[in-house]
Image (cartoon, rainbow, N blue to C red):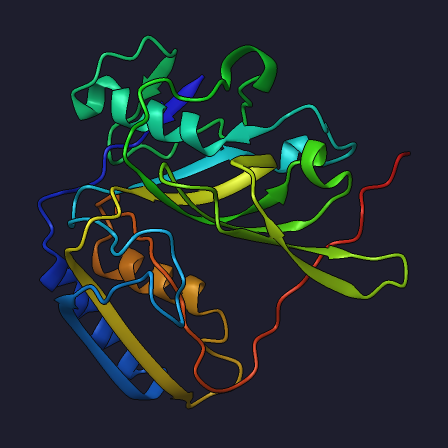
Length: 260
């Protein structure tokens, strides 16, 4: 089953920029926010599969699986194909398509959700025969069929060429290992941003020098809180890339799943 939450397209990217700038100014000493032409994301330091993030109002934020598939015991049979995700998004009737995938469309003000309902990989997630143009970025767990162990997945793929994703795993010496991941599959959970990958207008957010060490440490959560406060009755989605130029970042790489 697929749950759809239509995003509010009446709010302009310029309005979002103003809200983010005002919110970050209370947290960081140095803040610059603006609407600019997207730089070529294929170039360093981004190394994405496509040059852009598409145009505003054209992207989709997608959650697959969920924590319910990880605890109390992981379901290693659940895997999600990024090509199929792109196909489902593009073919959904809400986007003018004609998909027959079972779905529920919620109004923008809805707080009801049963997110976490999986789509069976063996029954549904076949490679997309229509070769939809897409660019998908995000995070997830590695597909067990690919790595034979749990791992953190940084998703970066398109319909062109092979995926440029990377994964982090914990080796036998308990040290994290980073490796290339040339598969479209994610494991039981993933959170991704799907777009066309075409050049277009984007938000450029620059923030530095937090004024309070205890406030704003989670930049993604901070942006979410700012948008919730600025647009309390709207459903918004945001996706993109994060570049750390200076400072330290706390991240984690999970150990393999227990067999018990």
